[in-house]
Each structure stands twice: as structure tokens, then as C-alpha cells.
Image (cartoon, rainbow, N blue to C red; front, side, top):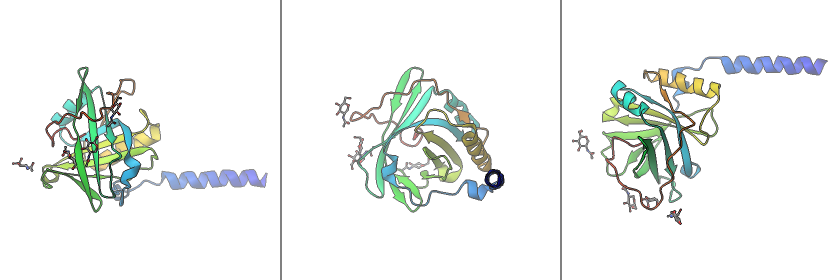
Length: 197
Ligand SMILES: *[C@@H]1O[C@H](CO)[C@@H](O)[C@H](O)[C@H]1NC(C)=O
Ligand SMILES: *[C@@H]1O[C@H](CO)[C@@H](O)[C@H](O)[C@H]1NC(C)=O
Ligand SMILES: *[C@@H]1O[C@H](CO)[C@@H](O)[C@H](O)[C@H]1NC(C)=O
Ligand SMILES: *[C@@H]1O[C@H](CO)[C@@H](O)[C@H](O)[C@H]1NC(C)=O
């Protein structure tokens, strides 16, 4: 009896702690030292927040998207290929990125045009990527996961993060739409700054 009461009290305490609203600063905490090796493999795009409405509208037209990070990684450099399915076509591009502190730069691209970073998330198999374009005037905030669809609380956390960035509500991908096949050696090149994920 005592045990049960304790367990319940503890559960209440835990839920009180969990429901204390996080500040935007806490919600947008950058991932300090991302382990690039943990990134290897494929991640499905679950949702995207974009600061500019015309871009967001275009983004919504995608059927699906994913990113594949490669094994040819050092502590501070790696490569990845986003794939986008749009109108039954698959578009691929490959980027080499270099970690500098808690953000990374795109090789061959001016830092003032494009940098990105990972943001902390409580979702264990997710990857949250914040891209800053045009000296930070335009931002894209992508939620990737090893799963196609997340739990409601996980989506709530993401939506709160999008709100903190003052973006319009994010576009959520349809988890039933097929992903593009993973492309390996034959990555075609696309224009570098517009379609980085
Ligand atoms: C990435 O780096 C590799 C090795 O340095 C190079 O062969 C490749 O062309 C680079 N790819 C891009 C898209 O810059
Ligand atoms: C950065 O953006 C400016 C303005 O759009 C452009 O002129 C310049 O070529 C870009 N630099 C790189 C390295 O992409
Ligand atoms: C690319 O895919 C083909 C067929 O799926 C496979 O045989 C090949 O080893 C792959 N290449 C690389 C570099 O992963
Ligand atoms: C890593 O591997 C991918 C796929 O084979 C390739 O496109 C990319 O250029 C490689 N990056 C480096 C830095 O070698």
C-alpha cells in the first residue's frame, strides 16, 4: 500500500517536472559536440519549419524526403546526401560539411550564405537541423528521424521549437509516401545552397 502510494506520488512529481514549460532558450539549445559517427545512415524527414512562406509552400509539395550521412567521416567532417521525392522524381545532391564549434559549414559555400547546426531534442532517434541562409535572414528547421512518424508529444516539442524561431507552423510530411531509394556512388550534383535538405 505504502509502496503504491509512493509510486503514484513519484509519478505525479515526475509529470510535474516534465510539464514545467521550457523556455525558448532551453528548447533551442544547440547540440554542443555532435558525434558525426552517430549520424551515419538514413534519416527520414518528418517535418520542416521554414521562415519564408513562399519557400514553405514549395516545401509542402514534396512527397517525401530523407538524408543519408556517410561513413567517410572524421571527427569534424562528413558528407551527406539529401533526397527529395517530388512529382514522382527523385532529386539528389551531396554536400561535404565541416564542423566548427557547434555549427557546421558547407565546403565550397560562403559561410555568410549558409551555415547549419544541430539542435537538442528529447527524441532519442531524431536529428534536428537548423540551417541559416542569407546571413541568418532565412532559416530552415528540419526534423529527421529513424522513424517515419513520431509520437504526439515529440511533435508538440518540435512545434514549440518552431514557434520559438518565429516561423509559421511547420509542414508535416505524409509518412505513407515512399522515400527515394538511397543513392550511393552516383550522386548527382544540384545547386548547393537552395536544396540542402
Ligand atoms: C567532397 O569531398 C570529396 C573528397 O575531398 C571530393 O572528392 C568531392 O568532390 C567533394 N564533394 C562535393 C560535393 O564537394
Ligand atoms: C553568396 O551569396 C552571394 C549573394 O547571393 C553571391 O553573390 C555569392 O556568390 C555567394 N557565395 C558563394 C560562395 O556561394
Ligand atoms: C551502390 O549500390 C550497389 C547496388 O545496390 C552496390 O553493389 C554498391 O556496392 C554500392 N556502392 C557503394 C559505394 O556503396
Ligand atoms: C563520402 O562518400 C560519399 C558517397 O560515396 C561521396 O559522395 C562523398 O564525396 C564522400 N566524401 C568525402 C569527403 O570523401
